[in-house]
Image (cartoon, rainbow, N blue to C red; front, top):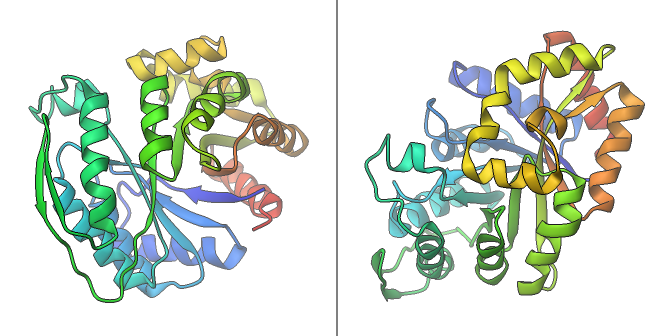
Length: 296
């Protein structure tokens, strides 16, 4: 079972982030992932912290596409590769209308078309190739050359059928969120395999090892229950047949959590991005179990 660790870096000083990455490497996690939130820039943080800590893969889960032109993102990602010995998994996604349109002012019209055109330009740029692409949603002409950098693995946050097919055709796989075993087994994995032979299915899961699962689940609802109102998340929760994200969070004692993670593997997850949740004591207990279960 291949398990990477994701943390919320909002409020963390740079030295604390390096310490988190070093701890993740020392206990043997398969990777260390950051999201692009309202804190610092995820790729810049990974470049600096990753250059200080070797022997662990680093990744973004995820960087939104709209605010970064493919030429700009390719330059940034390849710079991270050069700085860290080519250990980056680049996770990208279209994000949500509430962020892209309402916050940033970009058009969110036909996001699947945008994603296809974005990947059509980005993938060859990451390989150092010359691109001359003129689409409906973007133009990209040029080449990025960063000495010592190779193309990072490219993963796409995808949940709907069209996005999954695009991820299978034009990337190395997908990063899922709020997807339980039913959604993985009956929807996500089959759709992805229609477009790809051996895709990565990276399941992002919130995990809490606790003595009181009901209480932890209630706290989870209070903090994250609103995520179920976003259309793409609502759709995957409906496919799972659950009311909210608290029902796909992996919560319980050590035996229960291990069993739930194995069920996700059986459903088609090839690896995990685990997000520990709970009190400091619960998060420590969670990290200890996840490090024990990680086999890569």
